[in-house]
Amino acid sequence: MSVLLRRRERSIEILTLNRPERRNALNTELMFELGQALQEIALDIDVRAVVLTASGEQAFCAGMDLEAFASAEQGAGVKSHPGFDLLVQGRFPKPVIAAVNGSAVAGGFELMLGCDLAIAARHARFGLPEVRSGLFPAGGGVLLPARIPLALALEMGLTGALIDADRALQLGLLNQVADAGLVLDAALELALQIARNAPLGVAATKQLMWRCAREGMQAASAQIAEHVATVFNSEDAGEGARAFVEKRPAQWKGC
Image (cartoon, rainbow, N blue to C red):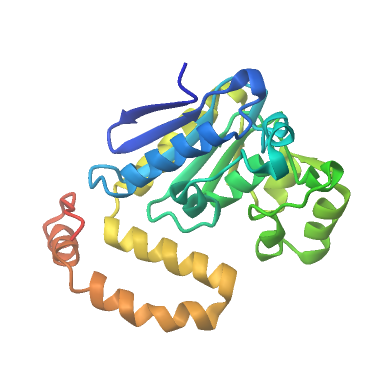
C-alpha cells in the first residue's frame, strides 16, 4: 500500500497522506514520497495548485513517527527530502491548500503551517506537543510568532496544549472550518479559484507575501521590482489586458 496517494482533478493535484493506521505520522518513506511528488509538481506546468489531505477522519498528521524515531540511533532513521523541506518552510512555488480532515499536531501542525491556505474539519485539534516528548518544534513551529501573537505562540509551544478548530480559525491559522465530509470539496473549490488566475502573478504574490510575513516589509519591498520586471512584461500580462477588453476568459500560458 502506497503511503502517499496522488490524483489530478483538472489543474489541481491532490496529495493524500496514507498511513491512517499510524495517524498519518511522518516517517522517512512518507516524507520522501511527499517530497518527490512535490518536486515533480513544481516542474509540471499543467498543475496550478495542490491540495494536501490525509486518509481517515481522525488525523491529518500526528507529526513525526516517534516509533521510527525511537528505533533509530540518535533519530538518524527519520530523514527528510528537499521537496518536503520546501513545503514546511513555505517556499514551495505553487499554492498549496491543506484539507485538514483531522487533528494536526507537532510535525503535522507544522506541515499545515507550511501550506498557504487551510480548511479544517470541526473536530480537528492543533498544537505543538514536542516538548512533552523531549523535543522542540524544529520543523517550523518555532516560527509560529510570525503568524500569531508571541504570547499565544509561546503558550502553545511551551505547554504543548492543543487548541480546537474554532480557536485556530479565530487566530487566523485557518481560512475555513467545515463539516468533516465537506473539507476536501471546500479545499478544491478554493484551489480552483486560484487556478483560474495567472500563474506568474500567483507565484509572485505568494513568494512576496511569505517573505513579508517571515522577514518583514522591507525585505519583501526589495524584491518587488524584480517580480514586476518578470510578470508585467510577460505574455500573460498582455493576454490578461486583451481578455479584459474583449470580455472573455484569459488563456494563461505561464510565461
